Image (cartoon, rainbow, N blue to C red):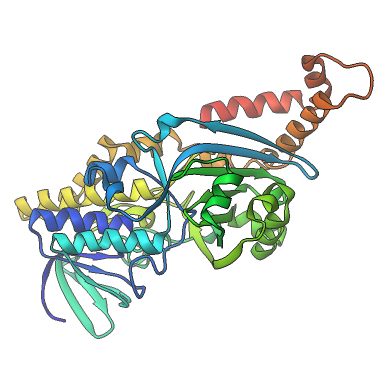
Length: 421
């Protein structure tokens, strides 16, 4: 392939497709390259997408996109070794307009990339990009096998372990900066899902699990409801996984057998098993001469302990990358200085604002007491409150008794948490 394109986008996930869709609608000649057999074939995530960013790009996208369920129910389960405590929040307003949806990436990514193709972008799948082309210290294209393909700008949207970011000198990878996500898709009848999660037709639930499910390793579990399946998984920090010498497959197996989880997935059939790294504490520089970095490739993920957001950040960054390319093309200047407009756009929007707001969260969330001491504390406290075996104490007295010996540490952790989350 010898044709020159205005823009080459590597990766047809949400970031790449958002950039390709935006640029194609502006009239740019865009090539989008996907390593998998089809968009979504190699993309793994929990299965939840916050709607705000995509709704700005494609208003009321849910009327045509292959979404699974709109999330109206939020649950948080604290798991002790022998007990669990669940907070259950339901809000009809979360569904009108939709705050978030559950999705299956294999279906969703194909739809989104298809929208980019409809707008005029060219999509080529099953192609691995091996290197970058440099001319006069500026990136001017990519190398894929024997093909050298030229472009004014390359957008790296090639995922958490971005080869192009590394080739461009924007990032050096350290496995300890990543979390590991392990996920299963478990098939269940639609009515069974709705009965077990107390949902109306079309409504969905997102349930997070913190505590014994990760054996003290910072991280947590999740269950997201799809139409006829559940996305069930564990996310843990790789550095702690290595230190404790625990196999990741052990965690998902034991998670599924925990009474709080087993009752929800009982009778289900495992359709898929996958694992993926998540750049929770990893961050890349976002631009250089002739290249921009979007989505997971730039570490544009925010985890504040309640919401783990990646797709909305990816979509917003893809749109911003397109706007930066538009400005650079108008000035016929694709230098690092010109493309720095991309970072300016991300600072104006929620992407880098939220990264800044929650910049201390990753460090705080690696506090092992969040996954050992506190889930057990809550379970034991409520055991005290509900058990009737003689004279009862006031709830406040039970709280003081249960927290004895840990009050100062709990207070300090609470202060750190308020500052971080």
